[in-house]
Image (tube, rainbow, N blue to C red):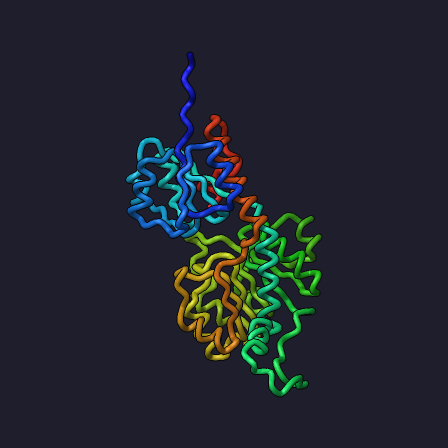
Amino acid sequence: MSSLKRKPLVVVTRRLPDAVETRMRELFDTRLNHDDAPLSQEALAAAIREADVLVPTVTDEIGAGLLAQAGPNLRLIANFGNGVDHIDVAAALERGITVTNTPGVLTEDTADMTMALILAVARRIAEGARIIPDDDWTTGWSPTWMLGRRITGKRLGIVGMGRIGQALARRARAFGLSIHYHNRRRVPTHIEESLDATYWESLDQMLARVDIVSVNCPHTPATYHLLSARRLKLLKPEAIVVNTARGEVIDENALARLIEGGEISAAGLDVFEQEPAVSPRLVRLARTGKVVLLPHMGSATHESRTDMGEKVIINIKTFMDGHRPPDRILPSML
């Protein structure tokens, strides 16, 4: 009589949608995180010593030191998320560990949130939404009260013209914005023409000319503080900065200082350099209406989280069946 094949031990570091966790339990020997608290480095080390597959999220720092403690069974890190800047992919591959992610499924939701932040900052929506609940609307409507900025006719500069950047450009065109972009590589002509987008090889030159800047590129060593203090100073005083990508791409302290000094108009941020900690300077600016701060909600929809989980399952199942997972990460992609 043939013995049953052992199911792979899959360790999941955070709570996932119930349907995703249930399917994982059906397919794999799955260890879940019912408390949904981020695992400590000690707990992560214990997990990778035992697991065949680790399913981490952006809150898990998986560096070379941690990977050096991996047990012989760990063969796959199936990341729940698109960005893999929290994983030392090169160190993983050196140890024969494959890394996958979940691209594509959060594109539309993140683009929606980016457009929402542009509107929220320009039209002072978050600031206005507090007035009636706080019982501050005592004088009623006035021609000069709560004035924001029209976005129609303005120039939007997109930093990173990948899936999300292009999805944002489609939405922004519908709002009458002129599309400009900077990217590692120029996008194909048919995409550029469909978006009526202007390409800038020089990020500096683009920043000096646009009214709104949206960060939509991944965090890599090359993009750390890509929007540095020097580059932020190139922006117009009435410019708006929006970031739904990774906090590390912008020099937060420089951004806060320039907004405080009136050298940049305002910002809308969904991500931060030291998440979940947020700079007190940014918090103070949010209280004055100069900044809109969101707690990393860009892809936070039921549909997105479920789709991400399904991609994780497909990557694990494909890998365990002896095939190349569809969302494998290679160093050349970083």
